[in-house]
Amino acid sequence: MPLVTSKEMLLKAQQGGYAVGAFNAENMEMVKAIIQAAEELKAPVMIQTTPSTIKYGTLETYQAIVAAEAAKASVPVCLHLDHGSSFDLAMKALKAGYTSVMIDGSKLEYEGNIEVSKKVADVAASMGIPCEAELGKVGGKEDDLVAVADTNTDPREAREFVERTGVTSLAVAIGTAHGFYVGTPVLDKERLSEIREVVDIPLVLHGASGLSDEDVMDCVKRGICKVNFATELRAAYSKAVRETLEDEKVFDPKAYGKAGIAAVRELVMARMKVCGCDGKAE
Ligand SMILES: [Zn+2]
Image (cartoon, rainbow, N blue to C red):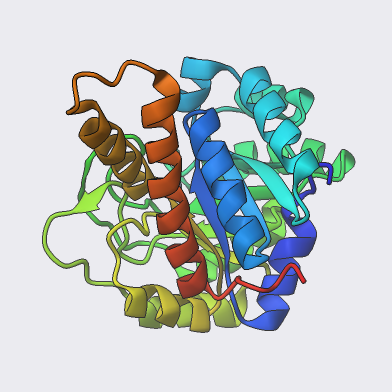
């Protein structure tokens, strides 16, 4: 089917008490793997690209690949801009046919974050496209391998932020970080529950690579409706490719591409089950 927006799938997740998995793709193989996993489990799915991925392959190219693969799929697929770094990039993503955008103003001070998030949310809303924003800093750096966690989304600020910006989902900082964790992450789940009590839009958990299944499930129970997985997919893909290439007779990119697809598909299926979105596209 054609690409769908994230609006309905996230609201359904919120009502149903599960989360939609949002998976970062870097290439055609990863897109195929993610959609195959979604089809296999009959799960709604979000595929997302970061600014560095877009710089590598361009918005138009990823949009064309994801739209072509989604068209053949029987489950809803949404293409999301992850960590949109500026108003300009968010506008380009909308123009290129992305069906969901994030504007990440979390590096700005509070008022600056409100300003840019509202600006993007307003334009997106006029096009019927949902807009995710981030309040408080999720630790680490997207595209970096090592993460340092941060816990600082204030529940009262979160409520005001959502009211003033009109964003349709909110990424919260409760102790997760991008990249792989050094040691065991300590999540502030009470804070998550407090935010849930005063904010009524779907909440998003970033930095889930390397979290235990129990932690992810507990966060979903406390109101997370979208969980992002990036680093571990990149790692699984590269490990499978590397292993295949150990055989020096392998020269066909299709051979190691297939290995990468299989590894990512397995991992995505496992994460979907933890999120509870399997079977939800039926
Ligand atoms: Zn993130």
